[in-house]
Length: 80
Image 1 (cartoon, rainbow, N blue to C red):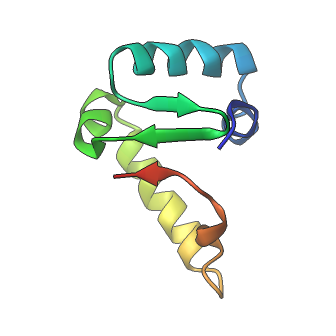
Image 2 (cartoon, rainbow, N blue to C red; image 1 turned 180 degrees about the vertical axis):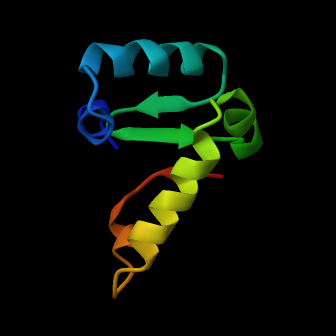
């Protein structure tokens, strides 16, 4: 996932994505490498996210996994 893709998905400026990603990476919550964003510990990112995280995940699952052929497989986010 690129920062540009994330910016388009969230409808924010790319600079905003860069600032937040850098802060999360510095805190050890995520790692970013060319085109990939990895979340090594899901519980940490959930604990540091805002109150909209859970409803957003639920809506994503509802929208993506209700489509035939599981189009959610096209979105690549590495969560270990």
